[in-house]
Every structure is written in C-alpha cells, then in structure tokens.
Amino acid sequence: MYLIIRCGGCRTFTYVDRFQQWKLCPCCGETISVPGSPVYLEVEEFTMAENIITQLQKYLDTSRKKDLSPDEITALRHQYAEWLRSRV
Image (cartoon, rainbow, N blue to C red; front, side, top):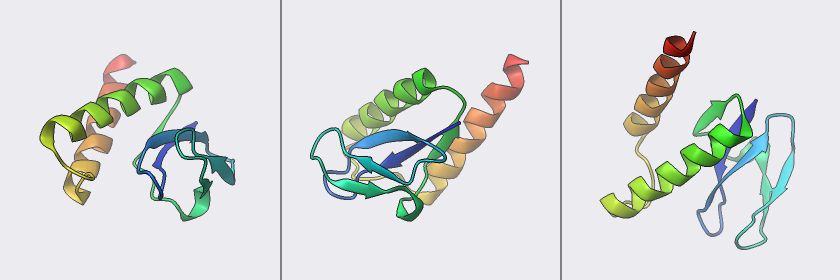
C-alpha cells in the first residue's frame, strides 16, 4: 500500500510506502515527515499512485486551486473505492 501525500514546502504531490517515516521531496529536497503529513489517498500499487498524482496536479492546475477541499478529498476516496469494487 502507498500513501499519496504532499510536500509542505513546494506543495508537490508524492507517494510513500505506508510504513515509511520520512521522504525527501523529489522537487525541492525538503524532508517530509510522513506521520505528520495529510494523506490524500491510500492506493495498492505505485504505478497507480503515479497516475493519480499526475491527474491531481492537472486538476489543480486547470481549476487554478492551491489544494483540494475536504469535500474533494472525500469524493476522491469514494471514487477510488468504487473503482476498486468494480474491478473485482
């Protein structure tokens, strides 16, 4: 399982293994404390995490938002859960 989180410095989305404690941001090099970071989504595979990160960044760019609202995060999690159920 992988967690999709965001760097506190440059606000870039990234993913980590759910047991990882620290991550260096691939863009700005800031040390991200995983337990202290808000988790946007938990996914099964890193390839899926990369794809979702790309889509999230495109969404924020096109909507000219700085971050997702709590309602959007809830909707994202619900949509991902529905997609997982439909795969089976």
